[in-house]
Length: 421
Image 1 (cartoon, rainbow, N blue to C red):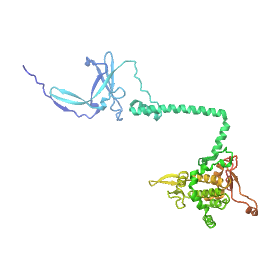
Image 2: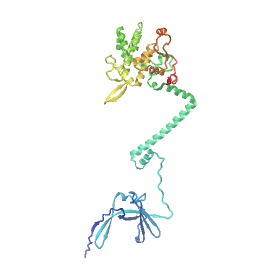
Image 3: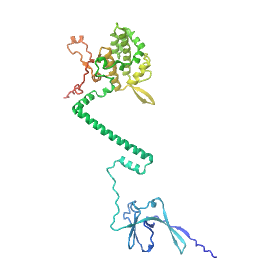
Image 4: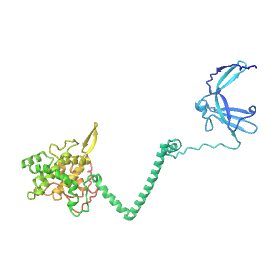
């Protein structure tokens, strides 16, 4: 028995860097070729050598007597394996017994039937939004979590569209019932109050008595009113000299006026006036500050429940240097003005002095007038007669609560600008 040994050969790597030197390997999609010698194979390359993307494009055409085959290395019909890995072909030289290794690329040959055109790529829908394009990508390649989120969002969108349709139908029914002009009038009345309506105390415009329009318990709850007993007794015990000092210092003119006119016969009314006077003094002190600390009112002996009420109702929390601070903004000053005005109405037989109040709060008279108008109060203009008669009249501007409440036109009181000549 004789053993035949295979002849040994050596590998020689041919380092061709050019794209045109790559060997072509063809693969027929509908089977293998029995007689490859009868194939007429032609390779075409792109003429645009300057374009780095197009210069490597190749088209391979194999023709037979019965059918033609076409393959390319670009586009939808190309094989992705050419870009994912490298292929090499070994060519053996039997004389030198050396095998040359060449770079190669694979062409997938598909039959080309005469008269049949390939399906053109569908043009991209330019009307799609960015959100719709992302949704289509999630449907095709998204994870299960992303697909569930997409389905949930579409269900919510359907529910939102149904809600919009129901709201539109309800709005149509309201317009048909009330009429467009009546609705426009209601909107105009609401806009006339402006942003001040958000900072007014609770109002019952349909009340049968003036004192029931702005309830006293909505301004000071029974618990808060009871906590002011000790502080109110100190206010009632102030002497005339101490009241004069408060008047000279300024900032509490309304409080001084209340204490000077306290009822003497009825002890219950006197106690109520004293307690409200102390509460108003805290309100006026808060209105003159910008940033409020937690020690506010401790020097005056303000009860803790009143301090918490003032900070919670009339201040805004802000963050500064990592700390929470209470700030009195312009809108909060308007709220302070509305609540103090409502309390003064209860203390002064439904009439309040706007001139003294705006001085105590540190706001302008025009702003104080806007608050009074938004509350539906009747304005009493100061007497503008002769000088001698004016001394006998109160020159301060007053506001009183009279039923029904007054509805002011927002364009009526707008001042006209003076023309500059």
